[in-house]
Length: 62
Image 1 (cartoon, helix red, strand yellow):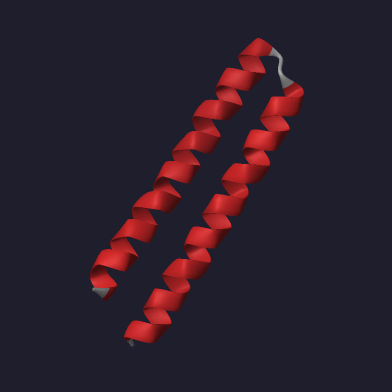
Image 2: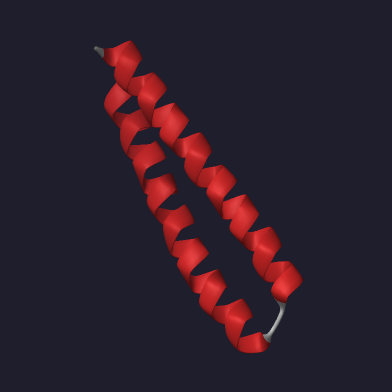
């Protein structure tokens, strides 16, 4: 069960990084600075939440 939670959180963190990269390029090309900032903030929040969850699963497992 811990392994499943760990991998789910790792995949979610990877998808947040991918989303951050793709959105940054998309909004930079289209010149939407407000949407770019909002997308970046949400992506970093998701990454932080995933890393905290990964740490919690790691600590609880060992």
